[in-house]
Length: 404
Image 1 (cartoon, rainbow, N blue to C red):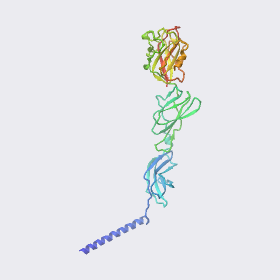
Image 2 (cartoon, one colour; image 1 turned 180 degrees about the horizontal axis):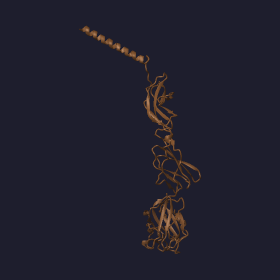
Image 3 (tube, helix red, strand yellow; image 1 turned 30 degrees about the horizontal axis):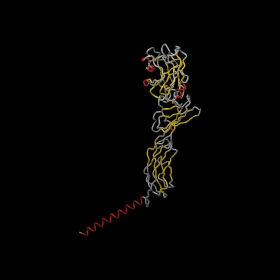
Image 4 (cartoon, rainbow, N blue to C red; image 1 turned 60 degrees about the vertical axis):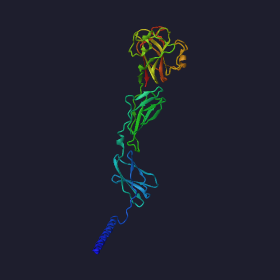
């Protein structure tokens, strides 16, 4: 019995050994009787789309035998060799001459003997070109308020928040010297200020974009667009903020109901007593009144004065302004020859000499001098009235505008 078991075991062992030898022989026959060697494979690729080209980047293999990489596309009909001469952290190549299309790229590494790696495929890679460029529009400006005029002669252009792929917007304008100036508006800013802008000249803008964050090319909109014409935008000052602020030697009021505050009560057109400002008659002309507009205006540009329906309407008056009333009070009366010099010494600025050639009744606008300083407090010095009175003045309403 033992001999039978030994015999059976020996036969099984011979069968197993024969089978193994046959498999090895078949394997060698299939491989040409030589050992297969694979070089280190690419395992991740960063794609960088461009204008009819693509950038590819991957981490260098630790395999020191690699001498080149080959990138295939169009079902291996096209290829590009990337030679490796020195050891670097990453491998880069740019493939040019492509069409605006979606590609698949296959990458192999090779050693000097021609052994190669297993393939690495990069799928659904979009290459951009003229079709994409034709869809681009210049960055949109703020349709509600596209610009703001500044007191220093500059103009602020206001744009909407751009698309996330916007890279830059070039602004082209003419300055007061007649020179063409280019300025840049970055995507993280919604406004740009053009110094020394020459009023009445054209402003143009042109934007640039990238199709993806890693893109190697920037696409520029094919033409400049015209920015809306820059006009002087007059914004009415808020009369709800106005309040009386009398200073020494100001003219008083005839009675409580004809106070200075009547000048910003919102009345429209010439008014009659008592819905008017009426001076007290105790301060000979020229005399003045002072009040607070409640806010600092950096580009105060215009006043409208409305007279009374009948008497004592100003036809010659001055408008003065200052930002801070501290230490601004004058000691001289309005009819003193040294009054104007003291006003200037105290920091006041004359905004305009306002002269009317009519009876002073109807509303009339006067533009202030350009580039005024910041102004919050107003002083009106009345020099002459239509009635010929030497000590009384009447007005119905004052309105101010800031240029923005």
